[in-house]
Image (cartoon, rainbow, N blue to C red; front, side):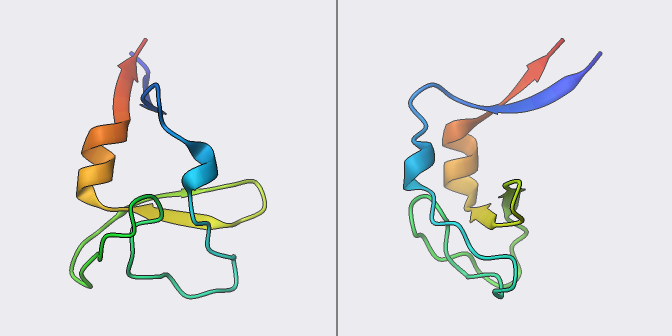
Length: 69
C-alpha cells in the first residue's frame, strides 16, 4: 500500500510565504503566520528551487490529508 500526503481542496498555494534556501527557518507558519515554538517539529515542504515552507499543527490538520493507494 502506498501512502501519499495531499492538500485538501481549497488550499491556496499562492498564500504560502516561502523561505529562501539560504535563509534560516522562520518561527512562523508559512500559511497562517501563527508562531511555531522552538520545541515544535513543524511539517515542512520544499519547492523545486529549494525554497522551504513550514506549517503549524493547526494548518497541517486542516489542510493535509493522507491518501492511500
